[in-house]
Amino acid sequence: MPSASPTPWPIRPGRSLKIGGLTPFSATDYPGQLAAVVFIQGCPWRCHYCHNPHLLERTAHSPLAWPDILAWLATRQGLLDAVVFSGGEALLDPVLPRAMTEARELGFKVGLHTGGAYPEALKGVLPYVDWVGLDIKTNFDDYATITQLPRSGEAAKRSLEILLQSGVSYECRTTVHPDLHSDDQLCNMADDLAKMGVACLILQRFRPEGCTNDSLSPFSTTSFPTPQTIEHLSGLFSHFAVR
Ligand code: SF4
Image 1 (cartoon, rainbow, N blue to C red):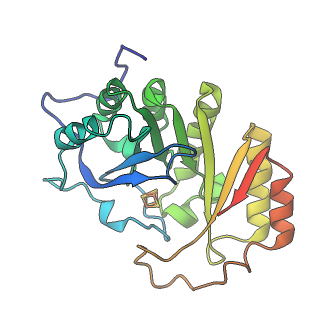
Image 2 (cartoon, protein in one colour):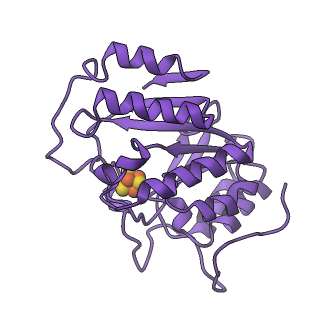
Image 3 (cartoon, protein in one colour):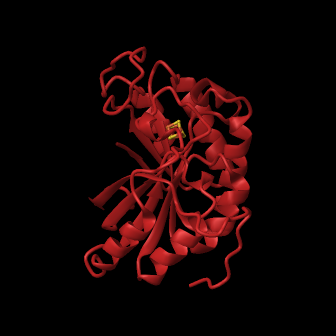
């Protein structure tokens, strides 16, 4: 377990995580592990399909206190395998490395869900992380069509490079919607990821639960992407799945 605390952020004394929610038990947020999921407030992006719009702003008083969650986690030793820090964008929070260290000291593995908006922050926490779920929104050049923030793809690409270089276990995940992606776009994206050395890609078909964007059209979960696209993608990665 790492003992140093390399953090790219200044941390004010007494500062604590800003937490907007907690899932006490999940079998789907860290592959093969039973995990509690801690949802950190704040995100710099505004993805059209966001499922957690209530987490996008950091409020003055966050609904949950990390010390309370930590005390509860101490009662879950032997019952849970891992703590996953999700969001929002968890890397936005300056005390994330400290919280990860505290979770590890209780004997839990640490998972991280991130969109990769903060490459240097990702580099700073990787010593404390056992597994990363990295969202890949689309082609890196087209990121703003999803995130609504110019140049967001540059940060995501750099985060992926850092993650691949680190050797930390990971999964790349792409949420797809035919209003936001085309089959050609997904194939080009996957080709680029494979060239970068990505071995694991999961396609997640958009589900409307939690999304407040009514302009996204409903679509049949079997109609997009096409079987030809899925076949192309499945040949590129040693691990590929559609959820
Ligand atoms: S990066 Fe995640 S939390 Fe942030 S807006 Fe996009 S989907 Fe929502």
